[in-house]
Amino acid sequence: MLELKSVSKAFGMIVVASDIDLSLARGEALGIIGPNGAGKSTLFNLVAGMLRPDRGRILLEGRDITGLPPEQRCRAGLGRSFQISTAVRTSFGVRKSLGRRIVRWRHVAS
Image 1 (tube, rainbow, N blue to C red):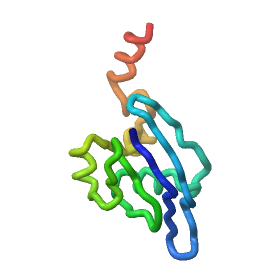
Image 2 (spheres, rainbow, N blue to C red):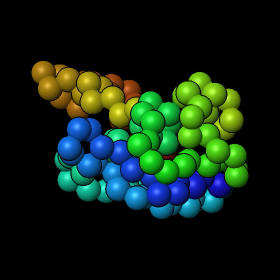
Image 3 (cartoon, rainbow, N blue to C red):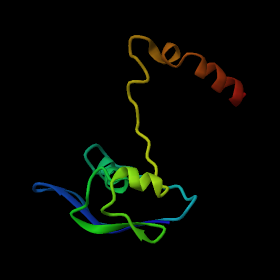
Image 4 (cartoon, rainbow, N blue to C red):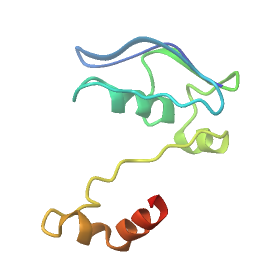
């Protein structure tokens, strides 16, 4: 289980996460949505250890991982992936950029 307990983060006077409480059970999926600047990436950076919260605790399987660096969180079972927005080149278009992956996707989906 992943738990956030009263996690907060500010950059100067700008509060981007305020007293976030969250519990996520093993195998459970959760979507985080919001407009640009809402703090979604900051929340993921806090959980992954890229940022430290100003307040609050982050627990993984009951163990406090708040002060652990990302590589130790990874060894404890917490992983993170990044969105790569350069995968589609605008000059190529989607079909050329993804190439055969689209064909395979269609084949699997049909």
